[in-house]
Structure formats: structure tokens, C-alpha cells
Length: 439
Image 1 (spheres, rainbow, N blue to C red):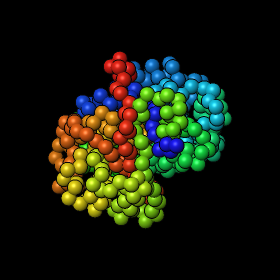
Image 2: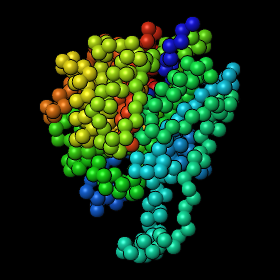
Image 3: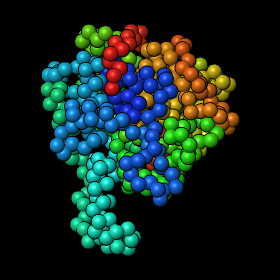
Image 4: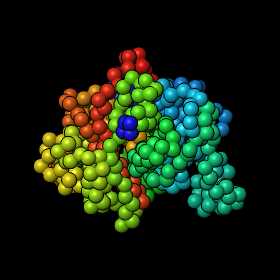
């Protein structure tokens, strides 16, 4: 019996690609999806002038296929990513047994995925300005006179729709774990598989948060990039010039199952093997990560995967481009790997996509899996002036080399920490035809 947990399907919708192959090609080319934020009036904000935005032509295609009346944009891109992953895995309904669905969304709050499209916010702002203008006291009175909105509830039809697609009931788990939610969702899926509760688990997350409300919240935290030059350079993990993160809209999805079940289905190669993971919640500070906790979750992931420090070939970093997070992550990595940091290639996907909150852990795990299967570590093209305090090895161009293991990190507000080790499978999935890269 082969009880290893393997990734058999992957799907993404991101600012740099709405298929796995187009997303991967953009990573290797260092092609950015960060643009000047022109959908929202940001003239009065000290930062947040750049967002990771899915191109309009791609949005139109995704909406045409996966949009539905009343369906939010974040649900729409999540449907698209899940459909890609299920097709990639060759999973079609009806299945023999109930399936698992683990999804991570963050709502409400400054790091949340608003169920509404940003266009809804713009209409509300326009209605308010038409009614009372821009005077703060008049705006406050106008808002006070409106009925209170209902309490936020998880009323998405998404689980039911996935259940109908697979033709079986679902064992459903919805996680609230801020920016570590993606990796935590993968860990929860692996737990369900090891318990034997289900044979197949869909893991997904989505975020769409470039709204006046969210941008103003992050601006109050001074967490967003204050870069004034080329928008494509605004997110620069581990660069001494970094000044904050860039938020994006994105979705990712994975299909997980045991290696034995995948073999019974006749799967033609898998993307990655899920090794061990480390999880923690540290209440020391709501937004400042702690070096000791980052070190602990990394060491836990290595121990549970049976991989020593010498066994890790590459690090897929959280790499948000904030002064504190990058330095904290780098210091923890140095504590764990010591002199080996000089030879460990570090990848930072947010340099091109921006930060996708709960979706980032899944989207970036797709890059980790492809790094293993293809033997290529993507570059970090925005790290032009490496910060000597971080002293991590990023590369201006793709590095082709055998990669057996990848360490993936994700950390989030509220003291949420997650690290995971992925192994190269013995039967890696071959690249798709070039035609699949459109999107």
C-alpha cells in the first residue's frame, strides 16, 4: 500500500497566467503582472498605487465560461482554477466515494476576500458622492442613515457546485488562516486522506481584494509598496529597496490523493509528493512575524518529512517584499540552514504576481511542484540590489538543475505560520503541449 500523498491536478488564475503552463512560462520569463491601479482613486493614499491585476481580456474569457448571476469574481476564478485542476487530474464524476473539499477564504477584514467585485464598491462610492459629496461629516451621516448590512456569512454556493460536478457528497472544510491558509488547506487535505475519510480532495483558495476599503486598511498599516517607479518593480522581495507588498487577485487549486489511489486510476505521472509540514499560531504580535516561530515551523516540516537540512534543494519563499517579513524569513532560514544558504536557490513568486493572501500558498505550491518536475528554479528579477541583511540567493535568470525537494513557506497576519516540504515524484508529470499555455 502506497500511502504517500501526491498532487495529481493543478489549476491557477493569476495576473501572469490563467493556465498552469502560461503561469509557469511567465515565471521563467520574469514577466510581471503588476500594474498601476487605475480602477480605484488612490490619489489620496500614501501607498498602494500598484496591484496585481488579471488582464481584462482574460477576465472576459473567464467570466464568459465560469461567471453566473450572483457569483462573485473570487468565486468565479476559483471555479476556473478547480476545473483546471480536476481536468489535469483526470477526475470526473461520479466518483465511487465522497470527496473532500478544503478551501481557504478570509472575510471580512483588511486581508480578506470581499465576496463582492470591486465594481460594486465603486458604485457604492459613486452613489455616496452623488448624494452628499465628499465632506467627511456628511458621508458619515449618510452612512449612519443607511440600514446596516447583514452579518458576513459563508453563503457561497461553491461547495454545492463542486459536489454536483463530482457527483458525490463532499467532506467540506473551510479554513480561516489569513496568508498561511493555502498551505494549511493542503495539510488538512493530507490529513483527510491519511485518515481514509476520502480518496480525493480538492484544495482551493481565491482572493479579490483591490477595493477602496481594503486598500485603505492596508494603507493604515503602511504595509503596501511605496515604490514610485515602474509598477513591474514594485514588489522586490529580499531587495534592499523594498518598501512593502502589492496585493493581487488570484486563485489556485490542487487535487490531492494517495499514490495508491492515483495508481489505481492509471494517472500518468504526478506533480509532487507532499512531505511534512509545520504549523503554528503565535500571538506575540498581530502583524510582525517572529524569527523563532518561523524557525520552528521550518524545522518541524523538515523533521516530519524525514528530510534533513542537507536534503533541501530550493526554497519557495513567502517573500512579501515588506521590510520586516523578508528579513525575518531570511534570518530564520539562516538559523536552520547555516552556511548552506549560500548554495540554496530561493524563489519568490510574489515578485511577479503580488500577494494573493490565502490563495498565495496554493498558487506558489504550483511553482514548487513545477520546479521539482522540470528541474528549473524561477528567477527573482526584481531583486536587483540584494539586501546584505537578508543574504539569500536569488537569481536574475532561471536556474536549471536537479531539484529533489522544495521548502515552501507561508506566513500571515494574526501570527499564522506554515511551512511544507514537497518531494520530486519518481514519475513526474511531463510538460503539457505548448498549445495549453494560452490564457
